Image (cartoon, rainbow, N blue to C red; front, top):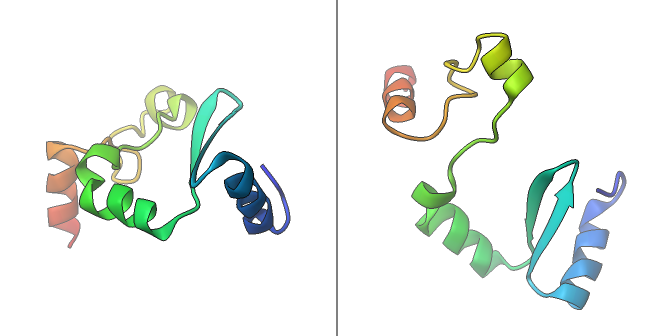
Length: 86
């Protein structure tokens, strides 16, 4: 991933590859949305599908923090935590 001015790199990638760009970095999939309509569709209208968090094995499971509100996976338990904190 670019360290400085990443939006310029993302813009170049969009011109070459289209509005949705996928990169695999250190074994993780990174999706870059270069179009506001795609971003609204995926992050707002379809948020239930795309709201999960990545698995942080070291920071979650091994240390025992996987039940914390910032690392918990999206679902019923996450909704209960959010409701209680609101």
